[in-house]
Amino acid sequence: MRVPDHALVQWAARTFGDEVATRVISPLVADWAKDLETAASPSAHRTAWLRGAVAFARCTVSVGLRAARPQRADLPPLTRGVAVACGSLALGVGVLVTPYLPWWLDRGAAFLPVLRHVVLIAVALALPFSLLPAALLLGSRAAGPATWRARAALTGAAVTTAAVWRSGRGGPCRRSVMTSGTRSDGRCRARRLPTTRRRSASPRSATRSMERPGLSSNGVAEPRRRTSGRRRCCSWVGVSVAAGGEHRWPCWRAGGSCRSPSPSPISRLRHLSPHSMRWDGCRRPSSQRPPSGAPSDLRPGHAPSRPE
Amino acid sequence: MAHGELFGLALVEASGGRLKRGTVYVTLGRMQEKGYLDSRQEPLPPGATGLPRRLYQPTAFARRVLAAWHTAERVLLGHAAPSEV
Image (cartoon, rainbow over all chains, first blue to last red; front, side, top):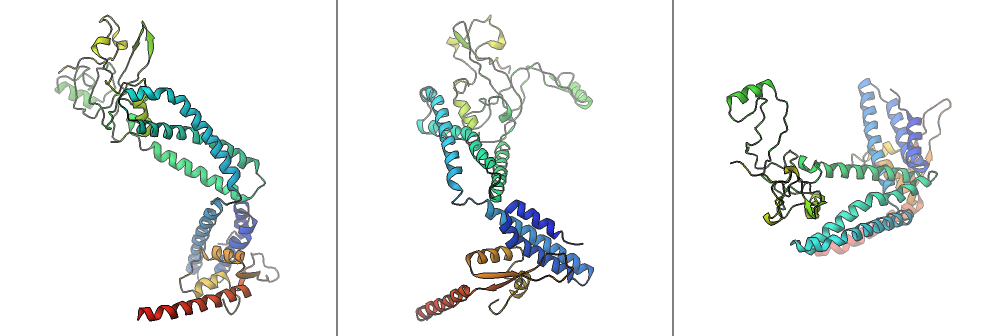
């Protein structure tokens, strides 16, 4: 098996530049090919091929990491563009969020944690958009050094990995629209609301349901039956609908279980949002409840009585 | 290498395992960039199609730096030796 020496050097020249290909990759591949030629037996040939391949991989990683490292000559235009865009966008988001600060502070939130959340969310929202000038700058220098492309690829891989890692930390509860059903200490509310939703059930569960009173024919618990789901999540969506001079708060259960003990910063900020019902958990004070004739789905703080 | 030209792979074999094959070429490239090494390509025999190997040898500057390093090491060890005893 021969070494594709010219192809490897051409690939390195395209990826890392001519200088790196000439100084580093070309001698490695040449020594690799010479080592293969001098191998006496087939087993020695295989060993030489494998050792050369491992050396090439290690050398490529080393050169790639070095090429992707920011260099002083390249920093000013990139950092300036990213910093200006990120700062402007974060400032805009912060200004938009500022009117909500007194609302949060009135409800007992400490100033510094709220400020920390606002800054964190503003930067998190602004950073992806601020990478756009950097991408445009990289694209406009297509004829520039190959280190730009290596750097862009490494940055993209790092951002993607971080995003996947961050999104994987949330439980199913986080995937609902708003997760204000979790308490501030991270535990889920142990509430199970009546639901008319029916799920398909296997014949085995249907058979089991006939043996247990309180289960419907398809094996699903009756709506009025409470289960032992102490860690059951319910997602409450507060929709501020001005009707008749008062806000109506429809809410419904969104199923799932919450496994993570600590909510993410974004979900914590949602707890503080004006449209969530963290302070009373979808229960509005009795003085604000509408007359009993109101539709049950739109009744303020739709929290039906729990059958015990 | 102080006494002649060597290939990268020969350097790895001569080092007894202290140099790794995957990183020695990066190190040699950086030393060449800093002016410690000179390199030239091995002339290919007529009819050969492979890549030419690269031979490395230290420059005069590198020899002076190495001599200074040895001198400094000897001086520092000479000062450090009495305190250790």
